[in-house]
Figure 1: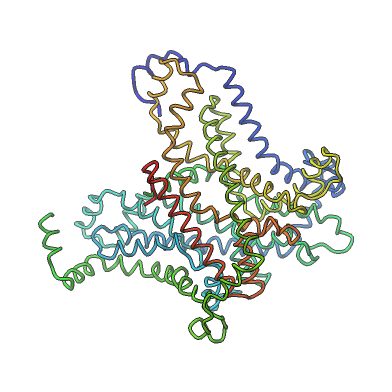
Figure 2: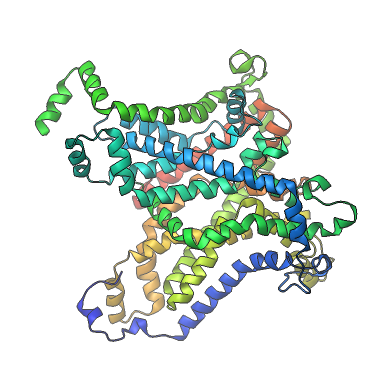
Length: 302
Length: 313
């Protein structure tokens, strides 16, 4: 935001840039907030390496595992459902993100055509769905009517496309100068060429942002899986995780625990959280800026 | 170009459509799957709302089932669950607006005032983090912290009471919900305000300094007014979704023992519809919910247009 100007070039310290005690107070408050934000995550990570007894006896936050153990991870990795959950989640994330992005692009393209008679009605049809929905049961009945309950399709197709993202895509496509397209058309380019060779590369940042949103959303979602799937081998990771973490009737088949290993149950919970969240946290620093950009892109939707 | 457009307008509809088809054929064909998607997953369910007025039978289908009129609506509004779910939904939504909405603004203002750039970046990264963690994991963490040997234990020990779970007592649910919401969303929701703050003309601040305005003055008279339109728009949108409480999270952390404060409309429709297979009743409740939602959004927008000339449409 620094503007080229006399005040900047002069290079003297403006009164605003001098550090005052208030600056240290502000820094202190923010550090405290960051600390509070991080504490639960730290607790989970530390607990996942702790002895079951320490988890049992500690009241409050576990800061440091006493005599660290990898026993919990051993048990988690031996759990076949967690492995299949991982596989399923990868399938669902890849499938629904790819399909969602493609549909977002195709819909956004028509919606952004200035000279197409039906572009406006089409855009209205899309935006209308942001304000009204049929609700849970009618949605369920439609998917059920398609015969997709207890199939992978139920997690790939319904919900893969977001009206909001389509409108963001439309805004981005509309922002491409018309002259670019015109010159391509004069050179004999058709719709396909215009869309995939000119518009897509020009809107690549928006494309990346929307892809991230779709992918993280699909990775984290569990509700549709819960209502549409009953067969465990089809469960995505989050649903397996839900059974381990939340359901009170954790049976041995889900947790992979038997008899005397029962004391490991709380430990296994923490390890499962770490195993399921590590991939997101590993890529988080790299995709963070795309999300920040995404917030801005959404803000200028208009 | 203008001449062309004029001729285009005057042409009969058939000719215009033919020309449109010639020009945009591929765009239309490519958008067909998208239209199919919205028709199938958004408009068909809207039509399916009819089952709110019908005694739905899977064999007879939506068309064939017998009409029952407003039976389910009367059953719900006259029943015990009506006030409980409405009250819980409304209160959780309102508490969230009262606490979490300003929290993000305050946080953004604080971050904006922060001078140590490297540290600022780290703090932002850390506070955005919970937003990316799945709700199932968030629920797992909340459950762990609310357990008798979690933070709940510390709290009750301080009070000199026997440690018990926060989620075993209906009194604590709203606090748990709102505090965990702040934890999850405060950082991420501050991004948009930070963007608005960055857009404020730096010269305003410089001028204020010359006029002798202190930090607090600058905050109140430049920063806050600068992001006021952003706040207004987001506030309307937030009001419009007052009743869209985080039902996925509630579904994960509540239990039958604390339905008194935690059972909201969405969790109720889920239990009624998919666990008890009472499709018509559940749809009726959901329909009522979206109607009320739209009325609130409309009212908030009208109010804002009158007061500040900022509106969504």
